[in-house]
Amino acid sequence: MGHPVERESGEEAVSELPPGQRLQRGWPVTHYGPVPKFRPERWEFRVFGATADGEKRCWNHDEITALPYASVLADLHCVTKFSMLGAEWGGIPARTILEIAPPAASVTHVMVWAEYGFSSNLRLSDFAAERTIFATHKDGELLTAEHGFPLRLVVPHLYAWKGPKWVRGIEYMTADRRGFWEERGYHNIGDPWSEQRYSYQEEPGDGPEL
Ligand SMILES: Nc1nc2c(c(=O)[nH]1)N[C@H]1C(S)=C(S)[C@@H](COP(=O)(O)O)O[C@H]1N2
Ligand SMILES: [Mo]
Image 1 (spheres, rainbow, N blue to C red):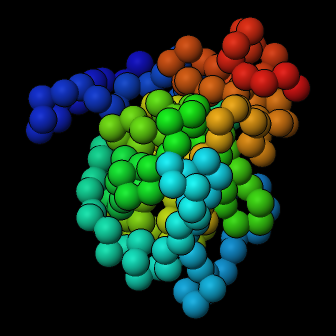
Image 2 (spheres, rainbow, N blue to C red):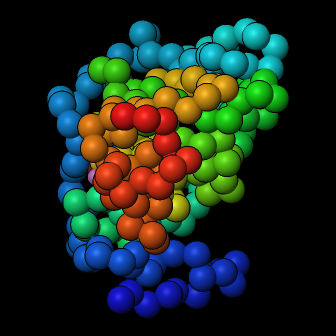
């Protein structure tokens, strides 16, 4: 087991290994498919689906990076059993996006969309969690291309596939739908503390039928 680390805020938020995980030193690169090339002139972040006012919203790279910057301490738990502990992620809290482009009252889930059609679905409550963040930085440095530059989602309390690299937008949904890995055998919710690794472990109500 890892050792809980006392943080400045006094909370023991990170740096303990969930069951079945082992500590990874360094930061490996793990993803499916190629690393996309960032083209600022074509890049935009979109919020669509069931927005409160029915309108889509769109920000270019300058506009997204001009949003208030925050940072969170969080671990990264890959479902293939390695965990990287104690990273500081900097960027735009998911709550900021919820404030500036609010969902309709009927929204229950969010699909996070990334380059090449990669996606991951989250319950609205997981997306709205205090530490969920669209990261532009890790440990004070800009993300590298292979780690998701210019924007990746970090959902500290879920397995890392729930945090797409190269994010391009979110879709507000009034019913749950499976994302890329959730359709391909991974658990619909993905809580590492209860080892929700695979879809065959799902209980009724954990996700839409496969
Ligand atoms: N777009 C995209 N994001 C992704 C993935 C992917 O395949 N595509 N893999 C996820 C998985 S399984 C993990 S463990 C983390 C790995 O992040 P890292 O390469 O920065 O360590 O990215 C997640 N985000
Ligand atoms: Mo992973």
